[in-house]
Image (cartoon, rainbow over all chains, first blue to last red; front, side):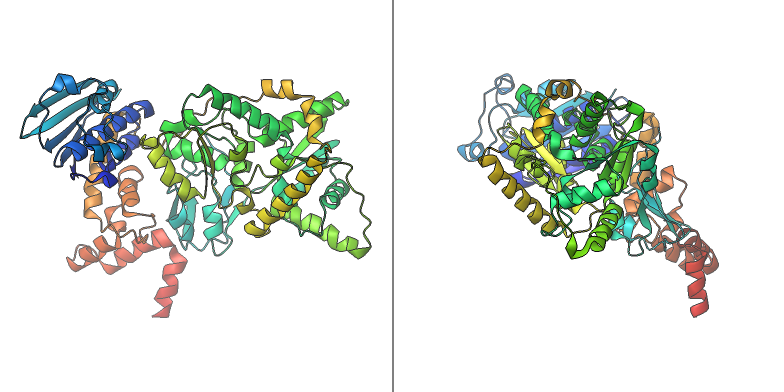
Length: 137
Length: 453
């Protein structure tokens, strides 16, 4: 099954709408609640990243019996040093974003904790694709 | 596994008007053959259908009052909300006396064990696991979480509700007084349907400590009749001490538990729609820094229970007055009956836990690949349906119909938009679509219109 959602730059108000919708689907599929929670937490973080740091993008989800594959594809500045960004506490968020309670430098590390596979591809000046995979059983 | 439900539909009275179907928070109701049907796996006994029904076809099953006389030792386990049903000039002492007169040798208020319940919860709050911890007080909320938020069952505090703690306490006390356990009948006076379900099929426990349930409205009638019979000549015998502490009187009101919580950050939310809205956010991990949630299905909590008689706001006001009066006594150093429970504190705290609550999730299929297949079909159907949720198919929403088509043998042609289109394309005769209407809304309703033409 393929699902697709749009993420709009700076729209923190609607952050989490893709993860909410995917949560609903996984619940109907009676995926173990703790796995659903991991998917939702990871995707929510990635959504917020695309809203805070990029110029918006798309969220796609592909579900089969064994796993869910999530992609958050943004158009944005890209991440110059992915290894640096993967470390807790490192953040390039603007003071404005930090004031809203985001940008603590926990985004990517938190995603990594919750998924079974994480792959971040980024080209500076073009955008970033965060690919996450979670086993469903 | 079968779930006991207190809410039932009287088919002789049900008009199949679908008001109940539209207000059910778990989409548990469908109209078929002109009658509403409740899906037992989805129903959480919240009572929305009971309130919405214009024909009083939804009823709350209760135990026959005469059941109490099977027990030589009879206890009325009464929530403080019951005392709040009466006007201010009818005293607590008088109601206790009438309960004695109609057959209960012992009357005890549910909230008398609030200090024990609070202590057990505060211990969990201090441990600080599974935040936010969710109160187990309201059984409709516990069931809502089981059905709709299975990921949050671990957050429910595995603590008996005060009604069970008090039933456990009074049985122990009466046994110590010499009664045989089997001879003691504890009857709970319930303000709502969910508490009946909690007694008849408890969550996290083998069986309840309560032996029977009496609906609050029917007991109100019995007591009020006595008050009328007594008239103005009634000579009141005052109870020697206040029954509950001021804190305990307020437990079942909104904020009642929160006031006593040690959690730094806590919230009280009443009204099932408000609770659902908030739990969606909790489930998404969007809520940070909340330690404790007091959630109640009814507006104004228990005073808003469907089996109460008095207006819920007036009930709250009366309960506040009573609490204020008792608070004055407390300030003067007077003891309350709650003191007697302190003797059993250690025993009660040891037995206050229940097993962890299990989810009761509604899945399309236990096999995930079959479930996926079904969901693909459902998504496809959802796109074909008008998405106006008119309910004419006998399901509450277009999405619910899509699911019913895939899982419960309904047909796409149950949708009126589809029917009209098929008629226009000559794929269906008018008689055939009327037959579909008959299957959903019943022969009588359709026949009435045939005769009207």
